[in-house]
Image (spheres, rainbow, N blue to C red):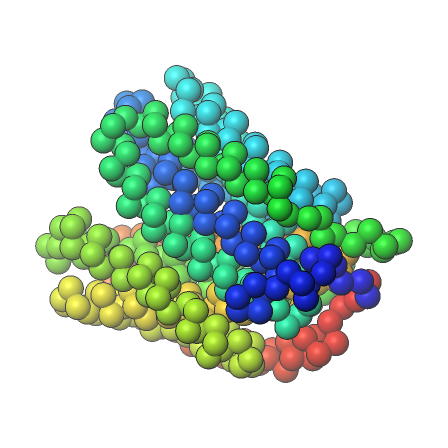
Length: 403
């Protein structure tokens, strides 16, 4: 086994016992997400600036989602074949170009093509960056992954807040500032991110046959698709549930902000409390919380009730973030870490596509009671499934797949 870390981890260790690489990747996450002004305002830009119909704008947003799903798999493959550093650079530079194209496009076909390119490049950093963290010593991974998750959520909070202010001065400004943020992140990679991929592995197994033969990995991926679908449907139907009871956008904004605030404030505490807990149990409880949060949203009768539902959903996200990437990193063979983590990231991308479709379809054709019942039952089934394979996860963690 070959583990690649900073050239001298002891000399380059920073606060929280993490090496420079983790903090550098965290800075990339923070800058990329804090500068992500386009995504929150994309629908408004398309409908107001480009005069597209809501349905056409939705198709463009779906194109970004499709591109993002593909980018997780592509980024994972590129990270193993050509290196983590090169893949991150390609992602950040490609995103800057795609944003410039999307902001300059004037016809629907060009807008749609640029949207696919935007989604396809914007996600390349995640599996490659996650694989770089997986190349660190195992005892550092949980804290490093939690740092990346915390930085990404803090950055998103900045972007969500700033995008509305910037949009008042013109939508074009959003695209150029977003592109500049991508170039800034690329500069950090050039100046401070070393290549961590092992170059001593002689025989590299093909990703797909290895995945198909890894039943535990396939099971985990499928369970996480269901979890992310469950989580995203709860957030997708929340504004509809609140609107049906007469709550306006401002109240919804306050309620949804609970999620971001909880993550930023509680994530560091969760790492300290959960880092050494059994991973299968933490993931199982996190999935159960998604089901409980989903049912709480359907029975809420007040702003406080909806805020409580969002808080429970947020707690599930926090618990999931502590062990999600580290668990998949332990499942991966050394030479296929980026590919495995790309598949792991794609479960989130797929959930963001399926969740809104499932949630809104159930709400339209049934009612909030059936929606809540479905969420709770799904959460309970996910909890039982994770507990059932917790022993296999512990065994793989103790004796992970090696090259």
